[in-house]
Image (cartoon, rainbow, N blue to C red):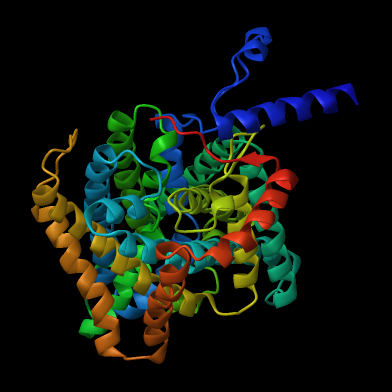
Length: 500
């Protein structure tokens, strides 16, 4: 009881301090250690940064997407070339983000850069699309893959019931969100552990593939380019699915404010992490082709598991187990960064204020993380993963292209900004062109209404922007004030203190 009262007094004191400036000097002197300011702490070092990039990129993509890349590219040769090209693209894109992240050291990724380069409206549209759709749907997709792999062993010979995978997926979202709300350090330890686990299974698959090649299993690779040439749009879709497996190369930019020494650690983590993933992906695909023909690979419900059955025999259970680890780690990384975007957006006034509040005891953006988790559970309810991937990529690449364009624009409009890292201007130019291709090619090749719905949704954010952000209508503020206050008391959170 006494502890409870002490905690409440401390919370109230810090709450007052965060709202009225520091008033508790006499109390502070008695404390053995100074009270940290209510901001997100710089807890992420270089290793955790690399693990966040590698761990978020290597999720379910390499275990699900190889089929889609092969299907659209038409043969083994073009398939491997597309995997390699996707790796180069991801590295070039991430180099642009490294320059932006060291120049504008704010968390929130593209949101902060679009705000600086163009206008708050564009940044708002990005945060609206990402917070409401892209981030939670991505989190949902990854946890659904996790649930699929985790429940398959319990249903030998048939696919697990949908209700089982969806319930398991929802449970994973709740566990991951709770871990991220409890502690930044705990979340980064979880990330580091699962990243090591997924690199281990990739190493096992690659070494097994090398052994198979040494034994002479090369027939699938010897006539790699014997097939019909794919269409313009099909190459675009192959790139989509390949880049879906690489998605996550921009994750570190969402947590710049929590990185120790960002001007050194951000570019280093990118230059170590992304080439590592690229090499892993190409080698894993080569390994798959040593034991499976193109047709077998396309027919396999889970490519990595089929590979395990053919190569490891009685030890084949290790593959699905580590794939479960891999998808869980990737979902953790996705949740970690999604919370930061909602937090920064709330801080700038583009989302409800409560999202920018920080836990007084744990220094995590708990409201933003919980909001992302709730939305993700809603996204589990509809069914097919692949349709989600295609429309998800369409919107994502619009913003990647705009961010690369922001880099070019700021070279001329913001010359005074200090740039610890400077990439040749050709690189962002290339990313802009590739983005245009990836956005337009599938639409030209196969126009579908879903792309139109996606565009309408992005611009529908303006309906909220004008009254609530631009005009700041009174009735909305009166309505939100008691809700914010009750949530603040319930979750023990406070507004972030200004550290400038």
